[in-house]
Length: 515
Image (cartoon, rainbow, N blue to C red; front, side, top):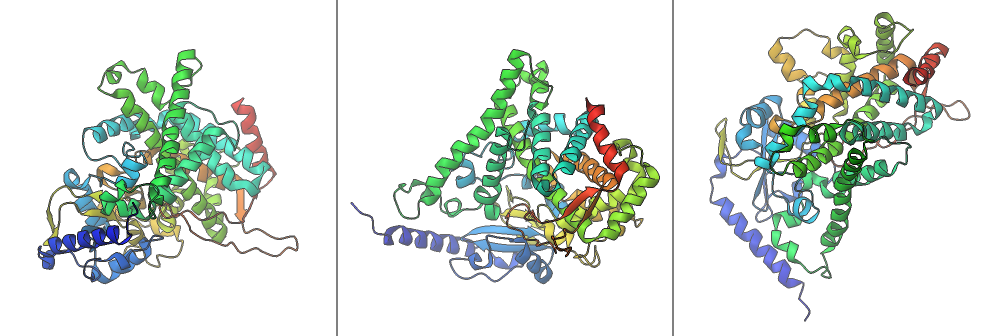
């Protein structure tokens, strides 16, 4: 028996009508300000699937630090300043650290056990404990030798084939994370685990979690019962394929590590170290939590690293004066007879300024994935209802004209200014580029160390400039952004070459030293 398309449409209309009237009973006067909603649909017309942070930044200018929207009865709040984000997501983390129960991403696509999608409860806390034990500030120095080796290997690959710089960055980011997490060594740019990771991270950021991860089925959960053959059920057919791929992404690297441990051929890693820790191993459902924690770390680190390094190259190409100033600092402090190490970091303040400005100017993740408020709350006399989805609007914070004059320009020197500790905390992009509160990126300390060494080593040995065509004409880079989660520039043409013969020799010598 055929089903009239009017039936599901009518059901959707009635449900929207119910949600609208249910929410209209609450006093809208106490809600945070925001764009005016329309009956039934709320602010549906105000949302965009791509670069939502751009209209959100305009709302911030018009309505202030806290902006409220209503989408078919679901509240969305955008926090547009470090103060608002800290007050709610950090200081009130006990009620702002939950995640929405997303039918599409969590249930249908099988991502509900990833740290980014796990609700605030025992499972989340267990995963965070495991990740903190392996990637807390105190443990990062133990990874320094590996980070140095991977950085030097990256430089050697880059000088051989600089045109394929994006592939080299991907191999560096993916290979480093595979090694740290599973003890696996990627042997080529098209390594099977690297390709699996790239495919699945692409699915996560550009399909499953696109637009904040909110699908129609998340607003209208009954849609998950649609027959696969019904028009409009394409999301279910996609979810079946995506779930199989995501399960493979979780299982295959972990099984490789377990097999290596049994054969005695494994390399120490996040997983193997915790499996050998008898005190932790006895915890309930330990291996389940370990497997998903490992995958969460792997998923979060790859695109973050690629995005930050891509923005670094773009900034150095467009601002050669900053590049020359950084190289002069390196030559004065480190010299030209060796490559920089972590011991040099405190003596290289301008390199640190470049790192901060790359995070601020590039904004790798302009909107964090939403938190879910677990109970009604009052903030500055504004009522934030239970169940509201709360976004940290990192883009608006990084483009705040008061905090960062001329915010669209790349000016590393802005971070040389001496400030009070309180103001320094508000202005330091590292304090909110990686998320907020109990949902901060668990790999942020590893990314901070690995990217710093990569930047310093590239500046010490390479010149980054605009590409030139066969006739000697400068090629202006075409900079476009298509990823809806990470603000990752599409590959652009640039020229990467050793600064001089001595720099080239330094890079080549690392192969002898590593051997």
